[in-house]
Structure formats: C-alpha cells, structure tokens
Picture (cartoon, rainbow, N blue to C red):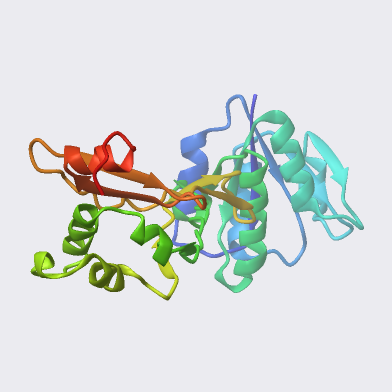
Length: 273
C-alpha cells in the first residue's frame, strides 16, 4: 500500500485538487488527513473526495474533528495536545510515503518548515494545489572565505657574502638586477650595487581547495587550504656556462650563471682570485 499524507489549507483553482487525487487513484492507496471543523474550502474538497470515492484514509484528529470523517476513517489517531502534521510526517517516513501539500501563502513559513522537515526525513513532496508538481529543496551553496596571502621574510645577502663571490658572479648578479654596463664597475662597486639593507618581502598566494561536510539548509562547511609558493624566476646560463645555486641557512635559494673558471674558484679547484 502507498501512503499519501495531506497537509496545508491553501486555495487553488477548480478541479485541481480532485484531478490530482484522481490521478493518484484510490486503489492500493492510503491517505493521511487531519479532519477539523472550520476547514478551508480546499480542505473540504479533500474530505469530499475521500467520502465520495470511499477512499481508505487515516484520520489524525483533535477534539473538533467532524464526526462523519471520524466514523468513515480506517484508523483514528487522537492528536489532541500534539501536532497532527508532525505525526503524519513520522508515519510517511516509516511507510516510505509521499507528502501532498495544499500550499498556503498566508501560512508560508509554517508550510515551508514542514517541507524542510520532510526533505530531511527523505520524504518526497508534491504540491496538490498545483497539479502534483514536485517541490524541491535547494541547499545554499557553501561560501569559501579567501585567505589573506602569507608574507614570507627573505633575508638578503650580507656584505661579507657578496664580497666572497668572484667578480664574474657579481657582474652576472648585477645584470640580473637590471644594472647596465657592469664591466665598468669594480668588485667593491658591484657589491655596493647588490647589497640591500632592507628585508625583502615575497607574497605567496594560497590556492583554495574546498571540501564540504554535507549539503542541507543548516550544513556546516569546512575548508582545506594548501599553500604552494609562487614560482621563482629561473636564470638560464649561456651555452658552455654553469649555474651556481646557493642555499642560504634560512632556506633562500639563489641561482646565477657562472663560467667554468668562476666555478673552479668558488670550489677551491683553482688558484685564481
């Protein structure tokens, strides 16, 4: 048997309710209704359909339920002091049934809350007052907060470190810094050009990688952000030359092209200066 619960009191056009219930049919179906005095015209149309077509229905009643609807119900549950709509949802969940809604714009907040509850309980929802159109619940997209770029401190070469390099290496480093006509400078002048009394600051952008813990109207979203340093500029050595790479104690890596003669001097393999 398929169970259909009916809640709401919204009004709709002529025959829409009757056509929807007729489309579902009464054979092998059980309807769950909340009979009450003072019902709207739409609710009365539901009650009339049940009685006129001798449909099987379960009545979730309070003290003011019309007696004729109580007498013709296959089962009656007294919900006095409780919430009859909530009892219908609990039954639909256990029976894997479907919720039918007479949408009421004047009671929209309450209706919406029960639709959300049904969605959370895994109960399909259709709008009886709109031709059995399914009502979908869309969860809001998770919002990923952008992390501020990390600032990494990079210490420059000291005077002594620069002076320990050969003049050829200093010329290439000065050229990479944008110094022109490096051949006209002495070693001491090149050191003065390259020395930097201020600490360099390099921003490292952090790409965002988001993971969520679930999607529903009150879902909690968590994020995992990994940091990848920005790619450093690579210095290409001319054909026949070498690349000298210096790793500073703080992890800074400096690369510069050098001739074989300069490499031998740095490695102590030559008597040159």
